[in-house]
Length: 454
Image 1 (cartoon, rainbow, N blue to C red):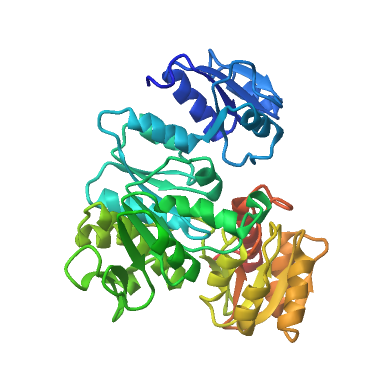
Image 2 (cartoon, rainbow, N blue to C red; image 1 turned 180 degrees about the vertical axis):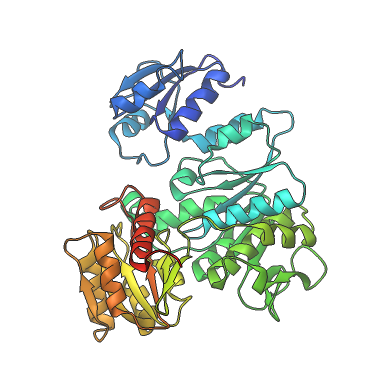
């Protein structure tokens, strides 16, 4: 890659994206240094990346550094990145690096990008399934797990790219052919500082040729209307207008890319079901249709799609009570959607709220709560919101104890026909490694309580 050859590039972070960025830079004949606060993570790269300089704990770029490629979670205010910026050294992310490397190819891949507060991973998985049903060489990458540079260097023709707000912040020139903004709610305010900065980062996905947005969300609708894209496409859970996809007579319908009211598939065939799953399916369909995929392939891909773990998964039904693992509901907006899928709920919530408010969630969904069991660092914040808005709902606050204790308390509150729903509305790292660890702990506790299957 010509623009990188001979340049001195510092990679900030030795995790998955840092390693992939370093490998890509080496392949492009750059001179590469990797730094990380963890000497162990750096040591793990020593045999994997011969020719790379590994330097722990840098607080400023080495002399002669031309470019810094940062892992997405590093904040602009971190000493190393702040020092780079002050020295006039450009700081970009791995996604931006992949974009620039792709521009040097004779036939670069098509980018179809997905962002939003919630539903990104489900949507990008649906999109990948649709594209493959159409016979397209496509792969889901980005925030979903596979670094974009790896997908690029593998020669994939279409990239279904999940983008977090952090990745978009560090990707100033990325212009996907089509991008969708699913929804917006308070999240990662501790990183971005304000909701406006968070929303502005997310809106970066709407800067290509086709911008798609969930117009039931008023903030998204405004950002979509203001997007610089040549084409604007909305999706809605209601009846679609011209230029939109939506739901009509129990069918997903396209009024943007095909003949008027072209039916894609029945709502009943979408999984996961409920409003969040249907919205994600419409978004994925819109991106695929923008790329020229047929309605038949959209239908087949959505039917073929298997939802990921810890996303509204029914673990078991015990004595008439359903136990649902939605550990991926890591913010209030996602938790609200999860609760909305059930009529009567014992809510298991808590963790790290990251500066987000739960008041709107409790106001809107409080009437469906049979009870609540609260765990984690910000349990008292959620308890206070419940006391303000639905004081009659019984609440158990666990200052100590395990997930098994929380499940037992929820079981005691539930009645036949209820759903005990793990929808934490918060991040997991106060008590667990990640949301998957939390979800597995819930699953294990439920299955242990249920006893052996007959």
